[in-house]
Amino acid sequence: MTPFLKMHGLGNDFVVFDARKVPVSLSPAQACVVADRRLGVGCDQVIVIEKSPNGADALMRIYNADGGEVESCGNAARCVGHLLMEETGRDSIRLDTEGGPLVCRASDGQVTVNMGTPRFGWRDIPLVHEMDTNAFKLNLGGRTHEPREISGSAVSMGNPHFVVFVENAETTPVSELGPGIEHHPMFPARTNVEFAEIMASDRLRMRVWERGAGITRACGTGACASAVAAQRRGLCGKKVEVMLDGGMLTIEWQGGDESVFMTGPSALSFRGEIDLGALA
Image (cartoon, rainbow, N blue to C red; front, side):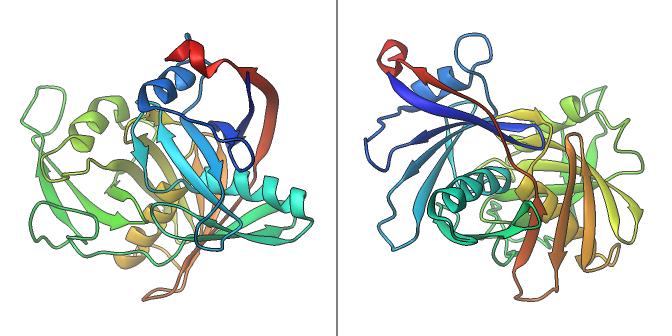
């Protein structure tokens, strides 16, 4: 049996395996079953903590609910960062991820993560061809329940995001628009999709369709991407509260080549064991 932790950041939930001492071999198919809320434990993402080959405190591998391995996850970084800071007694640690290094620090009972510098080049996101990533339109095929075109901004936070600014996030049909944008041919690696409403210069309301997971209660990299895209367009200031379905994250970005800082909570739901061999 393999032990695991069930954790969440604002309701964005994870099954976390610690493979630093005892290796955990997890195939995409097994990750998919672990994430299944009927057949497995149930989560938005499966996280595997491994030893880092680069001198960081740990390497964090991330599998979406569809079993696909992805580059970065801000809410998971807060959870894993909290675990490692408790373990080491330190107030900061560094995680390696496929999307780049993340530095986590304790912050008044929460965790602040240096999410790195946002990237806007069309190859960085990536897009299939050159485009003004600050604002461009997608053709969604003209289905009757979707507009033919939708405009948004593309941002890489170590993983791809397309931010759509809407008048009312609560009434936006996220489940209808999200899949078409995620799988749009413009995004060869698919994309996360954020629907952001500007409530004030220091507050956004955001709902998210995560690549490979669908609607989730929170997305840390998505909150960062939304705040960055809004600031690029002059819609908000440098410090923004982003209201998600699961609660609030604080995002700070000074612009340019500066890093984005995300602050929010993490929580341990329960501990358990699972027979990964039975999922083969």
